[in-house]
Amino acid sequence: MPRSLRSVALAAVLALAALWLAPALVGPIIAARVAEGAGASLAFEGVRPEWPWGVSAERTVVAVGGRIIEFSQLRARMRLSGGRVEARVGEGTLLLRTDGLTLRGGFLRAQAFPLDLLEGLVSSAFALRGAADGVYRFGARETLEATVSRGAAVLHAPLAIELPFAQLIVAAEREADGGWRVDFANLSGPPLSCSAQGRIGAAGELALRVEISQLEEPARFAFAAAALPTGPLPYSAELTGTLAQPRFSPAGLARR
Image (cartoon, rainbow, N blue to C red; front, top):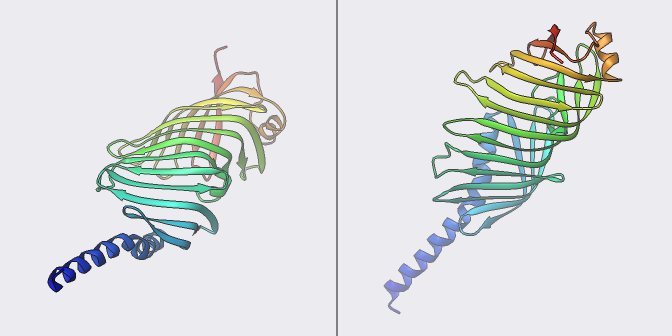
């Protein structure tokens, strides 16, 4: 082979190798800077390239708001059809898919995601625990459909109490001002069963209509201690205030 052709072939091989290695070399640096701008930090272990153009990491640690979330078996790949990022979190998994190269649309799917890891990040007065399965779709429309199984609603104010539940189902859609319209929310006890519809504002403002259908201990004690009605059931109430300082007021008896 002529020397000039060998040089071109070698340059092409080196270019392809650099292109293949680029995500593993540059990707973690870019991701760490993006996370830093959002008030978080990232640390990677066991980084290596993925074919045809991507990167994987054996362990990824995210620190945000005093909380640490650890991902394992993280894989990120980019194609003309879009990006794909998947990872394990404890016993659960996360999958992020994007449409095309613009990253302006796609979905995030969670399976058995441990919500305990997010406690304290959204609200200091309220938290959810349990395993979450659901899909968050983003793009021209933003929607959320999720189910939380074998969990608990944790209240820190105005009264500290933990209320276990069998299942929580939520369906909501983002509105133009950044708030969420809650089309359907249903909590199945015991000790508390209720349903809700309404709105959660962009700054956490609450405007929800709640119907209580089941109220047993320790939920009954918590309602009584907070000077809230414990019956007769079912009854309706308005949940207002904010996520940090919710206000619960009866709205009259519901129809049986």
